[in-house]
Image (tube, rainbow, N blue to C red; front, side, top):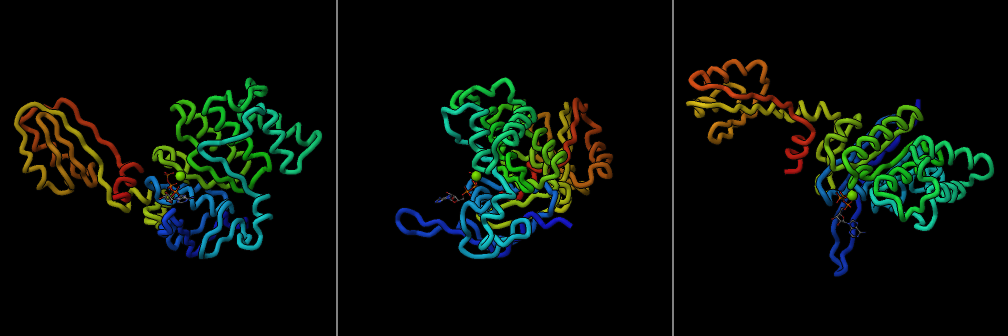
Length: 310
Ligand SMILES: Nc1ncnc2c1ncn2[C@@H]1O[C@H](COP(=O)(O)OP(=O)(O)OP(=O)(O)O)[C@@H](O)[C@H]1O
Ligand SMILES: [Mg+2]
C-alpha cells in the first residue's frame, strides 16, 4: 500500500515579532493525510494554513513535533522528500524576463532534466495546461490566471507524488478559477497524485476535497469529509418564505425542528432540522397568508466555516 502523504504529531511553530514577543502560530498539530487524497486546509485569515503547508513541504522547520512526508522523516530526509513533492502558491513569482517556455525549461534544468527529455516534458506541460498560445510571452506580461497556470505546470515538472497548493484560485476570475479547479481534478485523477491544498473558497473545498481540516488560531478544530462535517455540526437547512398576510411568527419558533427564526415584513428565514419531516407543520402556520415564494437551501461548507470560525 502507498505511504500516507503526511503524518505529523505535535507540530508547533512560533514567530518572534520585531520587539521580541513570541506568537504561537501552530499549536500541537497532529494529523494524517492518506495517499491519493485531495486534502483541504481551511480556516480564517492568519489561522496558520500557509505556515502548515510550508512545514509540510519542507520549506520551513517546525520547532517541535515529528513529520513524515511520503513515509520519509522530514527532519532527516528533506532532500529525498523534495524530489517527490512540489508546490504552487497563490502569487507565483518567476524570473520576469523569461518566457513561459524558458521558465519551464529553467525549472526543469533545476530538476536535472535536459535534452529531449526536458523538451518533451515542457511541451507536454504546455499542452496539459493550455499554455500553447503564450509559450513566448514573458512572465511579466502574463495575466494572473496565466501565471497561476504556469505555476501549476512548473509544479508538475518533476512528476510529484504529492502536490501542495496554497490558495490555487485566489484572485482569479470565476471562469478561470473553475478552469483551474478542473485542471487540479484532472491532474489528480490522471496522474494519480495526492494533493494538499489550502483555500478560502468553500465551494472549491467542497468540490475538490475528500477531507478537510479546519484551522482556528493554529489549532485543528475539525477534520472530516465535507459531508460529515455538515451532518455532525447539526447545521439545519435554511428555509426562506416570502408571503403576504398574517403569520404566527411566535408559533413558528415553537414548531419541532425549527432552530431559529428571523423575520422582516413579508419575509421569514428559518433554520430547520430535518426539513422534510417538519415542513408540513410549519407551512400550516402560513394558512392565513398567501405564500409568494419558498426556497430551501441545504447547509454547505460555508455554513460549517462560519460555525467553526466563531
Ligand atoms: N514570517 C513570518 N514572521 C512573523 N509572523 C508570521 C510570518 N508568517 C506568518 N506569520 C503570522 O503567522 C500567522 C499565520 O499566518 P499564515 O500565513 O500561516 O496564515 P494563513 O492561514 O495562511 O492566512 P491567510 O488566510 O491570510 O493566507 C499570522 O498571524 C501571520 O501574521
Ligand atoms: Mg495563507
